[in-house]
Length: 179
Image (tube, rainbow, N blue to C red; front, side, top):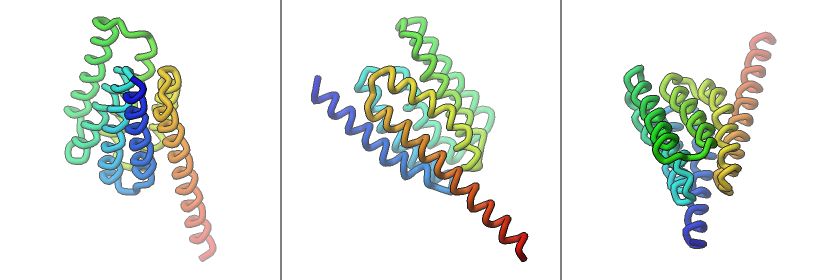
């Protein structure tokens, strides 16, 4: 059991590294690809910890990011929303999972809508602040060390990039006024 926990945390660490790289991408499809690798690793991490809701949510997110690189639109959005609702319903009704799965699936739904609907990386980052915060709460509640680190670093990355972009935009605007 201890070996499984160590392996789970290694997958969590891999997810942290790839997601850290992913959030620094300016090209939305490059972000989606690198993020998909991170999501596959963190999904494995959560499954190994027995956190089914997060494992399912992040596995769906991995597939969703890969599909969203080529196809977006209402049909894809509807498919992933329905899959999230179906897995939540199964977990809640059949497996009788605890109420905290609501947090994981809420985060997953925000990521689903944001990843498919938006094409601007800055806009995606702003939407993901709330989803990452929910993920952080869930990771802490299930005792996931690297899940917690994953969400904290993601939040820090989002805030840093938004701050940097805002500062650059302000500098550009200031330069135009000086001309």
